[in-house]
Amino acid sequence: MDAPTPAPAPAPGPAERPPEPGQLAIQLRGLVKSFGRKRVLDGLDLDVAAGESMVIIGASGTGKSVTLKHIIGLLKPDSGSVLVDGVAIEQLDNRGITEFRRRFGMAFQEGALFDSMNVFDNVAFPLRRLSRKSRREIRQRVDECLAMVRLEGLGEKDISELSGGMRRRVGFARAIAHEPEILLFDEPTTGLDPVTAALIGEVIRDIGERLERTMVTITHDMHVAFRVGHRIAMLDRGKIIAEAPPEEFKQLPDARVQQFIHGEAEGPLTDQPAGDGAGSGEAGGFGRRPSGNR
Amino acid sequence: MEPEGAAATGASRMPGAGEGGKSLLLPAFVERFLLQMGRFVHMLGRVFAWTPRPPYDWRELLGQMVKVGVSSTPVVLLTALFTGMVLALQTFTVLKRFSAESYVGTLVALSMVRELSPVLTSLIVAGRAGSAMGAELGSMRVTEQIDALEVMATDPIHYLVVPRVWAAVLTMPLLVVMADGVGIGGGYLVSVVLMGANPVSYLNTSFQYTVLNDLLSGLIKAAVFGLLMATISCQQGFYTTGGAEGVGRSTTAAVVLSSIAILAADFFLTKLLF
Image (cartoon, rainbow over all chains, first blue to last red):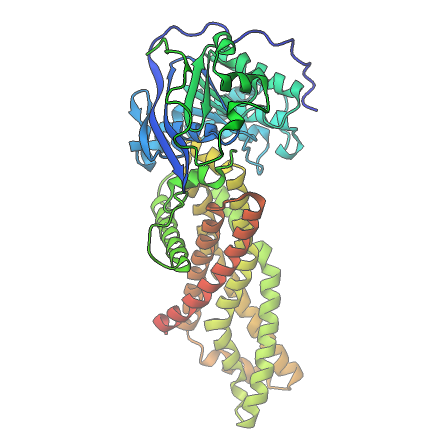
């Protein structure tokens, strides 16, 4: 079981105060990426506004993690472009991208915590590498971050002593420690029990509301999606097939969206022939809602 | 992680990773060999490029030196002792046929210092520290810890590989010096205690024909072997794909490829240095 934090109250609505349409923080333009003969991304387009919390949902293998890794430059697209504040990530050289990543904080699926360090050193890592803070300032900031993810006083614990949910939250604390402009969450609740998953959703919501940063979360957990997203986009076969604010998203008539939301085994998502992912689905999808911030 | 798996890791920004399809009209093993060589040269180049750049992690370097040195010391010394002993035993029997047993000391000392200490020590360190490097970096790759480093604007080659490579380069000569001493001591024990050789003349002949260059060339060999072993082992771990099984493959490959590289480099270095 996770930390002794009480289970959160029943899920409230989507995160408060969606940002006004404004400056775009992230623009994905016609992203194509293949691994061998498998085309994972097939002309993906997506915009994320500054200060917005975007959730990308989709079944396993549809390219969610790959999309996230393009945003932060861990992968280069075969064609298309990833623009972050107007900078084309794929055109940066290794040193350029290393510098650019200071603006990001990313929480990995299983935490990706350094198991040779304790919790405190994990959270302090980006501060020691990326900032000029003194020891006292670092300690203060680590304590703040651990408190924000509801893990006060656990700094001295070894990583091996933590439960799955605690690991994710230490990963969140590490991601926000150096106060990045853009936060990315990769499958934050995969493999967790429903109560811990709900707690994780609450923590992400808290982080979004308190820090007011641009956030991109990928998940296949609809509870988390509705809880943390200002907008939800659905990825299928390498394309965004639907995109809307949570309440509208629930009502979209696209059968693939409804199948995914309701977790049904039978439907258009499972009827599609397993292939290379290319050429299937509609370009743009009929469920797609014209974005208000373009 | 989605099933794109390995290809979807940060390694795919590295040369030859994740692109899948065959691009050359060459047999598969030649392509694999060229890929490994390309990655090796690329990694070595990045190690040299990152070495002079701050921040300098002295604690990590020292920690890695302890890991490479201390963990291997007992088995290195044991191997050197028995190698020196068996060398004395063999050469004593043979040289006695020519009444040249007074040269046993010379033969043992020169063999140990010029050849056996550096090669055997490097092979043992490849088995212990090289496999550990391959496994450690491999598991960091599959658990996305290397991606996490990159995301935190930290070059993983700078942070992980540079201290390991220099730790091996600096530690190997130290291990070899100890192995030299223990090996020569082993030869002395067998010759004097078992074969009844004169202890004073044994020691005299041991060092009479051994010049400083013999010792230095052995140490240069050791440093080069350390460089090869650590770079290859880190490279195998760094490009790990395929979960726990992949980590196992990388660990094995780290030891096997390091050992082959050490033996091949030994020939060329011997040709070059003597």
